[in-house]
Image (cartoon, rainbow over all chains, first blue to last red; front, side, top):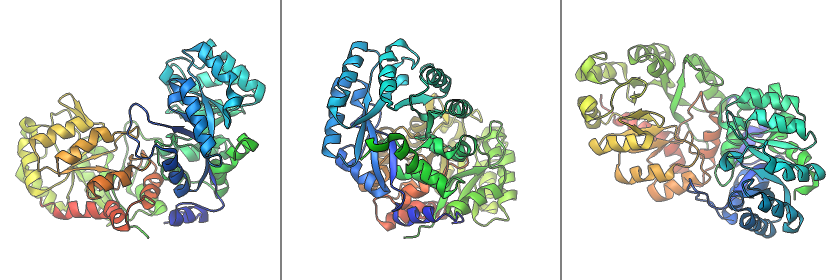
Length: 268
Length: 255
């Protein structure tokens, strides 16, 4: 292997690196409609985290993205059982506005929740829609990050729509889940124009050259690692980051330092 | 354990719509392989699907000839139009050029991949155990990906079919029935990102039906390399997937 990085060599040899405790900013929990998950239990997820040297994962329950009242409670139970490994995003469904307000009201009581999660493509409701206003105001007041599923060309959560929200709420840290997959130029421009917008790599890492281009054009300090676990093997995404043409400093930024700075003391 | 990787799904060349980070020449592919620690690759040229098999089949031979770590692969066409010669002549050309694997691009090349259009060739491939590679995005007779592979194998149950580049959003429910129904069905690991997918697959079906693939230059090879290197399976199974299965398929092919 011609890649000269000691960090890469350590990951290839051991599957993990002692001085690179990965933080996964984009996880889920529980079964989901269109996929078979071999490792769906929290115990199995912890095994995957251990194998890849992932210190902590921030998840939203799949159920919470459909029925937040049930799903967020399930996610809270996982955090309660594994406080050293899991933190949670509060899943919200904008198609039930009253329920959305109810979920925000119990954010603190659930325990271990460190941000909000929007899945607007699935809900077919735009991130710019009025139903999200209470959530934006809640996040703004508390400085909470919002992880948004974003996709290039989407009518609901495109990078251009993220830019509109970032301009309206400039202090909210916005994690562009999947980095506006496919519309890389717009995603990078949104991050360049709005300093609290981050490029989250889940799925995007697989596209050859995207990770290094993000780092060249936007800077590795604005790129976050995520896997959709239990969807994707953490080694897959980590491998894509490791073999990109980056410095080890860049790799550390992406794999853990940026998340440590973003979430601060909210992580275990 | 140090694995030897033999990539079944790598390409280079100039496409009308290029990938995000193109690999326009064989050296670009070789550089990436060296960077990631991939020893060998079964290679197709962009002209194979993006121009015409008559062009791509020739170009890939010329350009990989100086590089023993690159194994050329060709594309098929139905025999009725004679563009690649008769079936016998095509197989003789494969033999002469030491080509041991073929690709079908029925949607791009506008033909029907079935017994009516390609029966003479597909029968010969099945008899001679020549693996036919099919991208999951290909379509024919109104079928896509796994359905197309299933229909093909129903007509030619002893054909060796390798479907590559399957979607990352969870397709086990679609392809595992084919694994159970047809011994010749194989798939690659380039987008088999499912957490625990490779160990779960191997526990049920063994390791002989999975081939290491990178889908380079569309996909970063670093992902599939690290995933296989640390999959929760035996070292023997890892090596089978990394290179052994493709070596076996190519060695059994008798054009």
